Length: 93
Image (cartoon, rainbow, N blue to C red; front, side, top):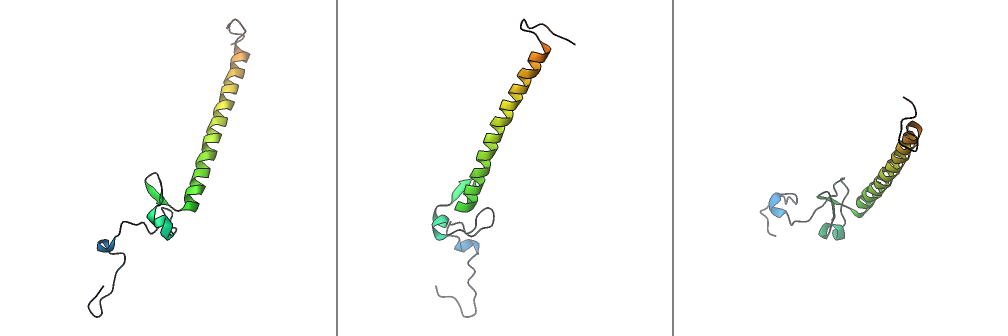
């Protein structure tokens, strides 16, 4: 590209945008391979490391949610057994 003498080339200028992402959503630099095909989570580009970390957190969150639901169901059943007899009559008030 031929620029006038003393002109500075601004790579961040909007007219030089080539459609590639330079940075991850968390601020990490993307490698050339990641720039061409970034991993999108929630509509934002992520590098491999950040995407992996986010997926691990989501997996742990899903497992925790299932565990909490199982414990809540068991506690509800235990309370129900303490309040009602087998014929579904109230044991005590």
